[in-house]
Length: 161
Image (cartoon, rainbow, N blue to C red; front, top):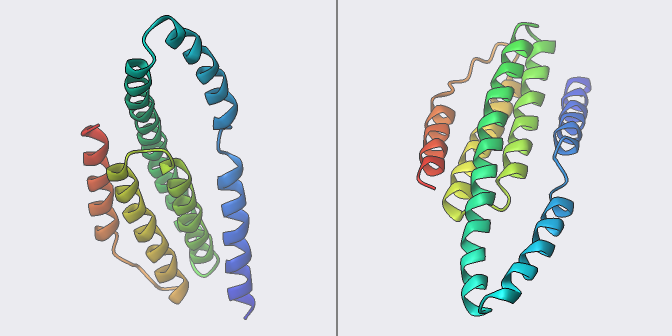
């Protein structure tokens, strides 16, 4: 009971930390959109609206991919550090870090293209599965092959944009 409560509390704290590190998108996008209508007043209204939507999606996807790559690398570093703690506390820390990493991946995939979002969701699911596997036993050594495959798929989706 105590271990489960500690694991869930750690997961909640890790998720809060992960979500608080997100940069405020709406404020910067609002200023970018306020300059866009001024430019569109000088040109025909139908063409700039269609062309400004595609670059915005591409820019959002590029930013999402950059953030996702950084999230995956940071999470791997933090998981490696938590694994050094050793069982049983280390397994709780590793499990919590996998959950925090999965939350960051989902948070940073918002606004990306459907292909990138779907690939990011697979990465998130595999991170969540690893968290569950680490919670099963202090001696658990789950395979990361499915996560590695999901990361490769995400990187391929990002390079296609």
